[in-house]
Image (cartoon, rainbow over all chains, first blue to last red; front, top):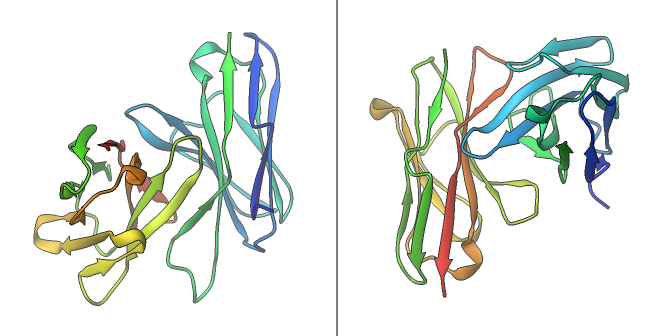
Length: 115
Length: 113
């Protein structure tokens, strides 16, 4: 089983619909992240969370919201999806403390298409 | 703003050719450096990382990268590529003053058998 699990893996929706992407992890990491990947742009950070009570905006948070329901769960919502939110979305986790080198551990990705 | 540049967006090589992918980052003090690989249809996996010590870092599958501080570069190399190296490669930088990784735009490598 994957350490970082994302659901759904693929989703096609229509403009204006609300969408939630979910992420759960078994690594025991405190830090969780949501990125979107677009061709030629690499990965851009949407939101990140250092613990259940700590949520922070990334570089492209407009149009998105998140919820950290528990240490192991971090969900991303699009309240009213629009076509330019069509992308591949990745959840990632990171260790904290002395062993932390900044390495991220990624989920399998969620491909979202907004028509 | 901190940024990471990967100069080659697409690279096509034949098997056994040597590979070098460029990565440059903007100045921002002490850094941790990473190369991630994304095989077709899969998630990103760590190839190698540098955070201190020997600037020549060896990773999995025969890859290595050299941190040249004076050039703000962390180029990825492999002496002889294989068809199975076909993937997208991402350079990423964590500035010690910050809390997150900044990614480059990625380089798509295609290796012809």
